Length: 139
Image (tube, rainbow, N blue to C red; front, top):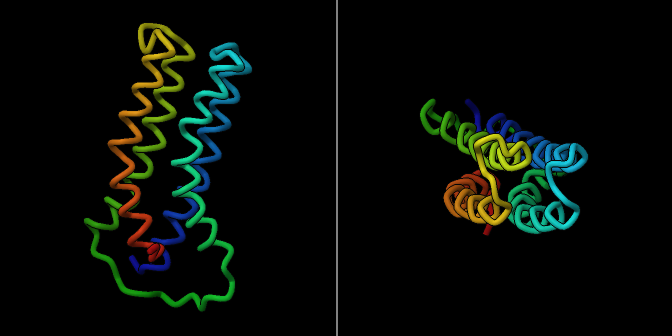
């Protein structure tokens, strides 16, 4: 896959994933899965990391001053990894939120959710950060 195509896919994944997780959180709150204080706490935990990744994606998507050339061709394995890891990150965060909100044998306590979100973010932040830095040439 060509680099600019890959950048577009990853940028869209970042934006859609960011919005989807916050929509899920809002929906779960509306369904009674979280209190207002819990909603605010979870938002405060996930917003900074999401914003860091998503801002470079949005910058890439709206920057019309760049000429969109194909760029270098990427091999299949790194292409799959670069697409797969952000998807896993958003699914892990969304899954943790869903598990706590339903409390049907999954995450029972809000404190456990906070710790799990910390582990998820720490685990994926390095990888998604590397992807974002490499693709969008962040310094």
